[in-house]
Length: 213
Image (cartoon, rainbow, N blue to C red):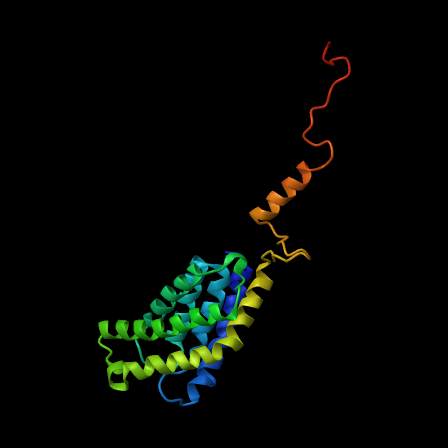
């Protein structure tokens, strides 16, 4: 991994953890708590891809497991965010740039529901039945609502920072609407323009070797 792919996620995850514990965790909202760590993981995975998303998700989940007040088994949320980071990385668009904000919100919505369900399933495997007493349906709905409302303020900013510090090439549009990046269409167009030059492709006749009558 590049050094920027270590430093930037570390800084963003630490900031998200501080806000998660000191602000969002104290709001006492009904149902679930807005998951800022999940949004950061999804935003980074959509730029870096599945492998980096998996590693970042594991690190984020481990930080959340160790952060006070920790009332569950260590590694439980690390497993959940590891899987979700990998899955979100598989949906990484070409160039790490989303075509629309709706697609990113859809990924966040699926991740919010999946994280709640996976967390409850892993808890059931280790004997934690707290989700049953609170109500799994209410947790899923509230997690979906809070994360989708918070996503437009977090995910685009995280993706923009990741692209900026990663140094990924940006595909721009020319005035005639054709892309000027390193795509196949641009290479094909360049080849066609070169081959269309006057005299290109014609056989040059060497003096003295002209066809005899």
